[in-house]
Image 1 (spheres, rainbow, N blue to C red):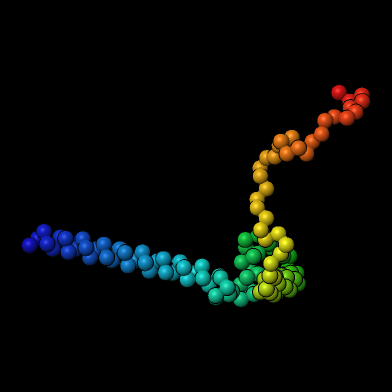
Image 2 (cartoon, rainbow, N blue to C red; image 1 turned 135 degrees about the vertical axis):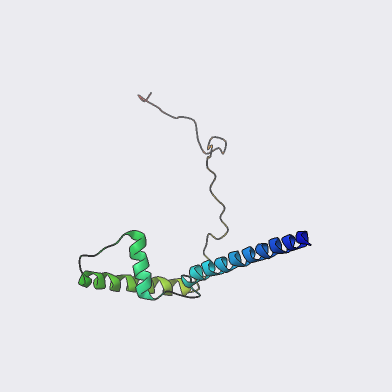
Length: 119
């Protein structure tokens, strides 16, 4: 009987542990989602976040307000540009450039015609 109770207790602890991990993961995902397009941050929050990431500080509130307006204008332009359907471009089917190319094997080099004084 004690063995059964011990197993039941271990099972209960394992379930509780899994639930705590799931709850933590859910909170972490919500934090990330709040910063994504589905739950956009306010422009003030985006500016503050940008200032933190790039270590920006301003000498006074007037400069900060001026820089915020510049930031806001640029972000609005970027968001508008990114929402437009750009369609396809001429080079959609281009493959990656090889890391090296021996032009001699491609027949692109000719023999030296007149080297003159060069050695």
